[in-house]
Image (spheres, rainbow, N blue to C red):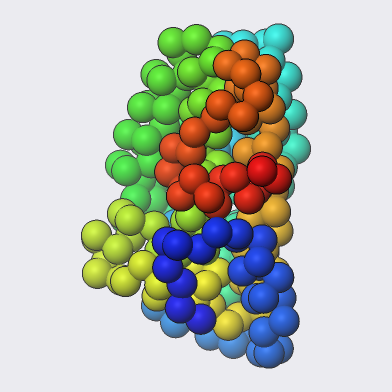
Length: 222
């Protein structure tokens, strides 16, 4: 299935993919699917690690702790389990050795990228609670793009076109199911962060940071 950045509702894509033909659960992944799955293991860890760090900075803002310890921990574990299911190595096998693993990324291909991204996001969030909420919303927008399409860094480093990895590319049922669940979670998290942001800046004033505005508006029910 080909995608473009003009897509206005990622939930529509997820629903479409759930009707894709069934394939053997343990069919071999192609190189693009392997690359994307490995990347997503690290990106889900990034979200969890940033939120845990922001939760320590702003203990009264329960949204960070709730999302980190609930959904994001589950998401990181889901990506770990998919790697194991397809006999792929885990780029961050010590992910759950908390708190020492927070902000530590050991993947050979993207470890440096995620380390830098972690530091940038935490520094941004350290400016104020509102900035921290914006950082959280940015992560969720980025995550939704990267679940469905090839992340920009993957395209740059591996020469894979944007529509040649991710949920919009794979026909493997275990990946379709896992990515669809991640996508649902990210949409819910974005709504949570935007709700907190707009309690400060006013209802309807949040502007998309990574996704097209019409996509964010659709997720927010506008």
